[in-house]
Image (cartoon, rainbow, N blue to C red; front, side, top):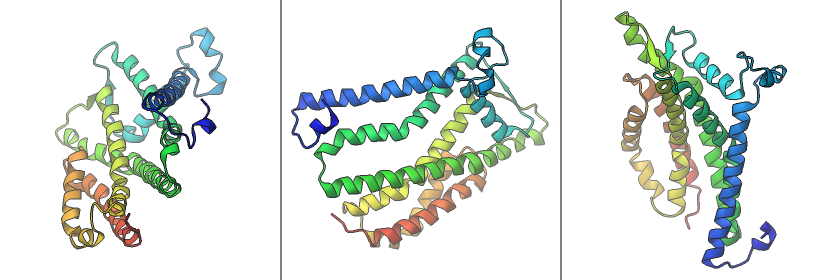
Length: 263
């Protein structure tokens, strides 16, 4: 059934399930194609012939990105990443390709989900949903970039300060390193989207904007506690770098919330 035929049509439960399965199948297909692309396509187009010669210098996109992350985070900190098993590098290679494929697919995933729920929405609900998705996406991307370029590099510098002080060789598990990077930047991305949910809560009368404004000092304390929990840095540095932008966004949310018309 085409998208045009589905719009505006009341469907029974089983047809909703069939439509959801179709959308999920589209999403999985796109993610699989992109995963294979990250695993196979060379980062340097001139290396395409190495696919057929077995040249060990051939680097697919996923390997290039993993090396770029390592260099950006700890390239000048003198650490060594080691594999704890023979399978660890292979698993990391595949996992990284899947994560990158999902990340690149997010706009398409959002589009497919929107197509699934769009027929049941009123015009004003569609407009609000588009605004929500747009704001969420922008803040998430800004949070990811802030986490990648600011939070995580400083976090690693602070974490590696202690081994340097007591002259311990800096050997770390390659999987632990990349899991920490991915977890840190994704958590930072979602943390930056909290103001969107604040405005959403005001829109649906779940909270009152005056209450949020009156109790913002308590909110800031809670934000700092959450930031301290989700950042691996034991010092206040990463916590403050994460909390201060959120506090600014929270003030912006209050400003916007006062102009939002509750439902």
